[in-house]
Image (cartoon, rainbow, N blue to C red; front, side):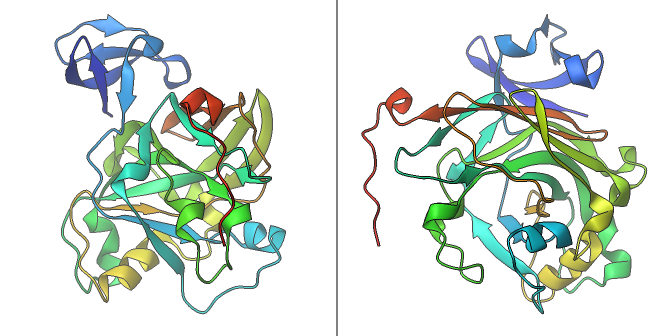
Length: 261
């Protein structure tokens, strides 16, 4: 289990010191710091980011959407990624912006035309993702608008990268999201519509997956609107807790945006 942080003008590999729910940070040189004393980066350099939409049946039902024939997948740019304890902007003109707690699967070996029975051999490990969405900007569920899912700082990754071998059963992990200390979202990876091995088979069937590529596997039901000042914590069994804060346009030094069509 490892992460990446910036401290004292340098980037360090870090490991947790103590229980994951309240861990301090041990830098590679042996120094131990409180987690708020460092700047957290994504725990690895992400390559292509594949994001799954509506990959939990109850979440699809929550949004009144019926199952699609193929996985609903879209790509995300690297500028969307920030680390643990980062700040995500909520544009002033939106009415519904919500978190999405997701298991992030990190590819470790090149995958091309991989069958599902061999797919997990290509997984290096896992981390937590909080992939924010702005429903105001959504055109439709079949063609997600770039402004919904590719916003700067809208995809939070971390805090730790956990080796695949350290997770006993990735198909039975509890996911929880807390907003200002109140539990709002709860699910389990056993309820994925399209499982991890199937996703790797599907994606590698028409494109090559490379080490460092990331698959965000979707979010369970229980998404609610969040506002500037809210603290959002996503937890997944064995992976830790990912903390994020919402801030306003004004806090980012930006004037309110005007809705475009």
